[in-house]
Length: 234
Image (cartoon, rainbow, N blue to C red; front, top):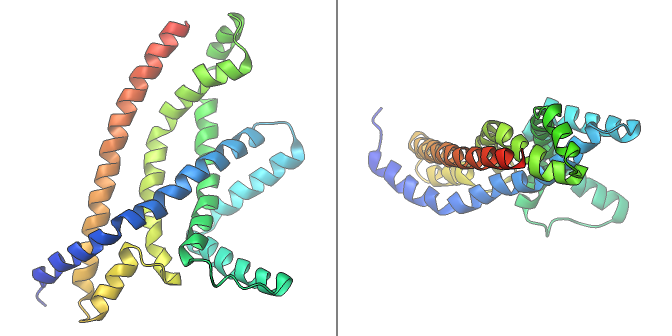
């Protein structure tokens, strides 16, 4: 079998058109999930037993089940409930919205654990020292805990970004045409699926490398900033 390199180049050109949509599908849930994760992290570190139990269940469920199941549950579950309970059809809602909801809830669960571990990594001695010079708890969190927690979380955040970029590839199962879905459409006309998927793999790979490079730069700058801030606070 001989690869059609001309078709690979054609596929790369066509797939590049859906890169912005794929990136929005990958990173919007991370941004929204970070807010959810921050809230869940605080709840899990609190002493409110009922809320803590609910938060633990949420994290356990979403971390313990595949993303594809979340997409199917959200897609089929929402449409069925809306139809049965309210006799309302959700057909007018774009399919990618269901993917965004599913990925956001998934991101919230994983990010809550990353944020929680980052917060717990900050030594109690720094917190006590900050409080001893008159800082309120909110000031301690903003100036001491949160910046250091973010630095500690950057490697895991990078992994999450890469993982969610790859997770978007299963969205085509409900006809969302991101990179993988577009590769299927391109290949269907002449059955050159291998070439189309090679092109898709190249794009995923290059974006993943870019994510790692950006993450490394951010980590360097944030680490330098946090260290200088801690010294000043001390």
